[in-house]
Image (cartoon, rainbow, N blue to C red; front, side, top):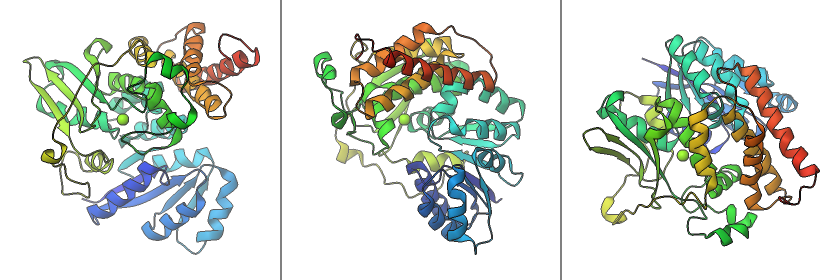
Length: 390
Ligand code: MG
């Protein structure tokens, strides 16, 4: 049976890899819709190559530019954030692969969940800020969520060998990021240049800084809480610098099932598309004899305070997770602009979390209001020139 796919965020690193994977899977898998924000040149190239029926340009200023470049193609071009929601809901689409930066893809994912689609979610924000809402909607409408994030794909795969109630612990692995060996003092003096170099994964600047603070892993703890319906006490993080084991599930009998592979996003992308089947793919194959040894150690939560906060936020849930994400985005922006120090990122997040009173079971509107509130708190705090931070 043919599978028609919408890729939300097709010009980013996940999007471009997804297109390579889909191409390798043969004619059964079809690129039905694409979306991008502003990389119009690449989007036009993709349109010519993959011939989608629909394209959404989320930044309306660039829609005309795309028209000019591919006006001769038989494709409907939608513009603005509504365009993203429209393509996610198209009746013909079987799978929505979401790889939009930030929370911009959330309304589209909720719309797709409403239609009972299969959602392959690659970016963290939708599950972090609206995990409960997304899961409820998916369940109610007969859809499914298959994680693409490498750790959650690994957990999802390991979960196939036992039942939900047989899980003792979910263990997410972490490379440790660029500051894995840093002391508290090193972290104090960390620079933007240092934070932008990741030892294993080649990703965008925001995510690379998130791995330096380990906010990235904190988000993954929250994601796992919702994706696998596990209380935070059953979640754990283990530093594994080689990034060969992508995560593990420990079952009640003591068996630990790990998923291994070379660090290459093509594998989790493909598994999300072909699940429950496995087919040959383009991912490099793992040669354990070349790896030699694998090492593990506990993360230091005194140094990486963001990670400890992540477990707490996973326990509380509700709008607290929205504040956690929005304050981080705002603080990372300030850090990248050179206005605050690396250590201030987590301080600003803690400040916002302390000021916030949590609400549970809220609507999308309330989630988005909380998002705006948290960003404002960051700005206000910095404008007040509080010396303990800047
Ligand atoms: Mg990950």
